[in-house]
Image (cartoon, rainbow, N blue to C red; front, side, top):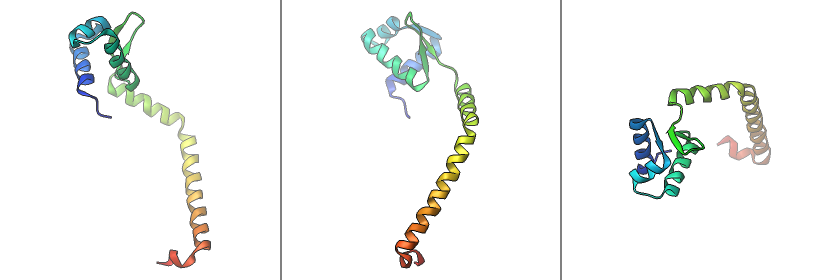
Length: 109
């Protein structure tokens, strides 16, 4: 997903300052604190930033750590993923057989 220019601006601010309060961010962006908080919540949802109870915002883990997290999740669920792949292949074969029985002439083309 591509970030909006406003969200990119906030990330740049956080890169430069390291940490900023939601009130200060609102002043810098010339928006209400409520609007600034909404932007930060979107960045949190996307995994780019985090905000503590006091309204202090900082960048979330860097992308390499996020990739490591994703790889660990995939590793944890690898058995389930493989089972689902096999199930999908079986369903494809079953669908092919059903189509073959239903209209054998079409499959020969």
